[in-house]
Amino acid sequence: MQNYWMGAPHKKWLSILVSHLDNDEVGATTGYRWFFPFDLKSLFISSWNMALSVSLFYDSLNYAWGGSTAIKKKLFDDLNIEEEWKKGFSDDLILTNTVKKAGYKIKFLPECVSESPVDASIWNFIKWGTRQLIWVRWYYPSTLVWMLSVIGAVALKIATILGFVLLVTGYIIPGLLMISTIFFEIISGWIAHS
Image 1: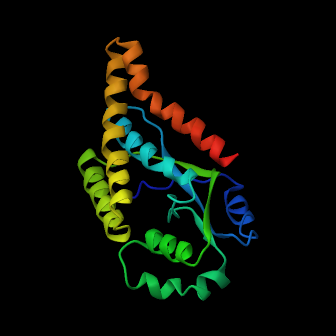
Image 2: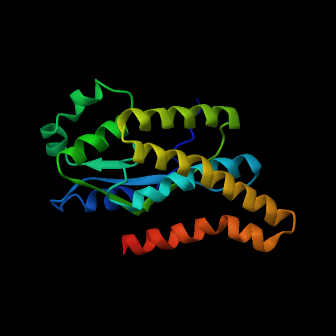
């Protein structure tokens, strides 16, 4: 698959990413990718990404995203993460589980979100997204987590896309209502992070 998951981070990205590792409760820090839509294909990909990124603001649901994660070397070694990586499929989910099982938090840093280009085909993105959902099911067998992932990955995306279609076709109020979850999630995430 094409490599479109990480854009160029800003100059302070790394210093911000490591700045919170002095907190004894924090095991790892993470940023994320952000796709800016510019056509129908990128809108689909961006809405998928947006729905999943909301969970990053909540300690119980968030995860370390492999494209922008920091962990202290001593903790990495103490938790034997290198050996754990040899046993699984997903480096970021393995790191997430290992850090959280050891009693640490993963701190999401919105300042470390990087714009990423959208150059995958819809078909490749659907294959990638399906694989991600399978990995979530594998690493988080709890029915609640799985169902939340499916709802977040499918229902919200359909609603968002439908909302944009309604806006473009002139149905302003229904369209705004359909995409309103984007704004509520941004506000909710901002409040949770404050």
